[in-house]
Image 1 (cartoon, rainbow, N blue to C red):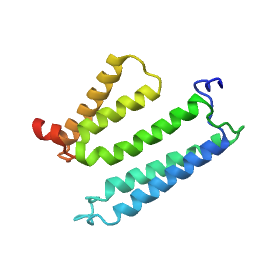
Image 2 (cartoon, helix red, strand yellow):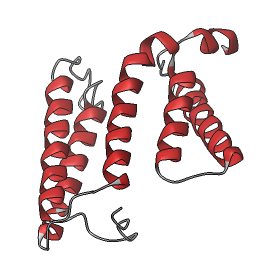
Image 3 (cartoon, rainbow, N blue to C red):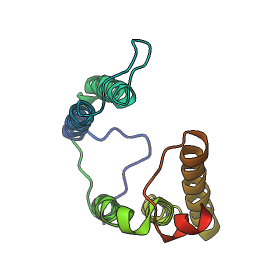
Image 4 (tube, rainbow, N blue to C red):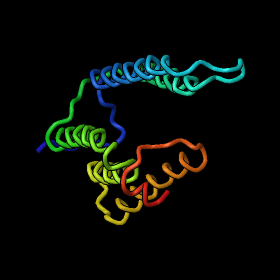
Length: 160
């Protein structure tokens, strides 16, 4: 069994470059999707597409700041670390597929619990507490403060 990668160790050149490329693709996709949103009504109003465009620019800028870190030896996850990476990717794919039918609260709580477990958190109280508290805080902030509707499932219908 391979020794786990120490915390704070750089992922290696290929991993950093791959991360930068993925983040740039995500930023480009967000920017392109924002072009379909309604135009602003006033010059002082950025419109519905303003916030996604701002996020796309910030994401791209932050991704590009990772490039100087790409200098170094290449290391790829091996053994149990590789399986944890596969597990996180599978959890993300599963999350995307169950978000609409289960709703934000339930899907996000389960996803965060799985992700935290894969990250090494073993304390059940911490897993459940952080997952539920974070999901609820984000949901009620968007729903109550920003009046933004997140995917609603059976749990959201009971609560709101």
